[in-house]
Length: 186
Length: 418
Image (cartoon, rainbow over all chains, first blue to last red; front, side, top):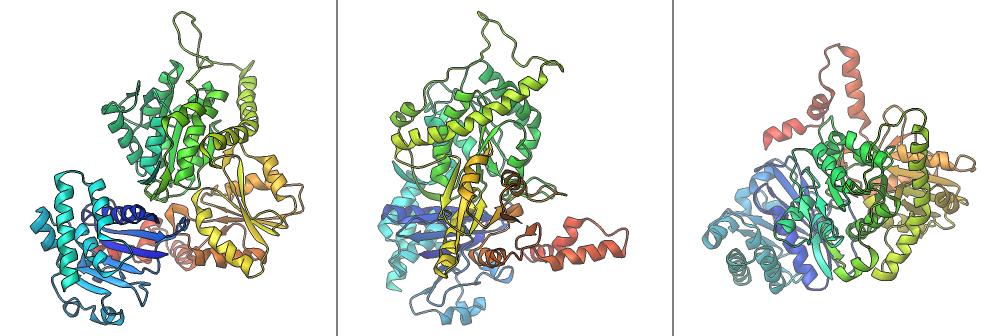
């Protein structure tokens, strides 16, 4: 079972990210579960979402305590919450930031992870460029599909299309593709 | 057809397939997506012959359904938590009148303290009302049980609530097989009301009944629930024949047969428990589980039959009768009172407290050694509790309990930091 925990704030598309990742896994014939964990339901409040991917039915209902993949859509959360709790030592870490891990004060955690498992991505900037909205979720998911083969980028595109039909979907796919290409080359 | 879909959306599809004629519902977390979806579907003309009645409250919603059901229309609503309380007069009216309304309850804690997360207090508040109460284990079962609920309600002419754990099921994306219309039509015939407002054949519905007849009317409601104990398993069998799935029924066993210890619970928590119990069996412990699918009617005989050889039962429930103890536990103890069997009462998951494999295992280990207190509050932080008790002993103006505890556990400080 592959477990994902996505951290962000209300309005950043954390829950949609989890949904799209689970749909992408489903498109590949896998079982997947995505569940949000809300605090107060308002913009700006911390939000966590969990995703589980497996080859058999997933019946576990506990929070993801030991993520294989940690996506942090908002780095201001580092000071407020223990975002890294339980991150597996062979896990993946994606942070939405234009700063370096050192500048964020998390280099020590990032350095413990295997090579190729860590990425700092200016997802908000890339999102604004493609979507004209600061929603970093599809960018971060696109980058992740370049780092691992848990889910293919083509499956992610299908999930995005399903969630956002029409123009919005096309723009999100473009943003995810851009992130994928950048991650593959960088 | 298999879909990766949010629980609420799947339920909305199940309701749409059940050919409702009137939907009247008021949104409340965590049921909102169900009623929003149904509203959208009705507006888009996707549900044939269906009207969505906008109302000002849950009381309005269920009252509207009482009216439409009385007029012979298949009627549906949904609520959670405070919404259940707001409609409570109508809840008792619907069952008292014997109207086959189906209602989804997205199980959520009742405040105070205000809490949007999952527990069973809302359903439990209506457990004596005469409504049938069916609990779904996962999103597939949520879909399947709603379809069965309409047929059950109409066969008995009694309302049915389908309970699904809020957020855990309502907001979870999972793979669900959405039935097709032909299958549902084969299982669920058109509504044939037992009583209907018709100017051509006038009758009184909801008549005032004095001491001379009240007992008999109330007895008949109880009698119908007893009848349901036969009907529910029969319908589950017919459902399986058409849809190919074992969904619904009175209870379900998870290696409970022959187990020395049987854990009894309801709803979604069994999903997390399964792995823990399998691990314990691998370690040589004789333990299994049972879920109660139908809480009302309470499946007394089915439980007695399933538990007759067990040495002990650990009831795990997300509900508590304040001042008394576990509600499911009390019901089960009554059913098993002549058995030489120890029934432990564990109350957990209140207000959405996470239930983990770890904390379950630790609690089960105590349970099999009969070391649980009575009742046992799962994962409780007694240091926090004791500090509040000390505060109250130390001064009269000790403050609001909820705020004191939030300050103590650092929630207020954390919120300020954010």
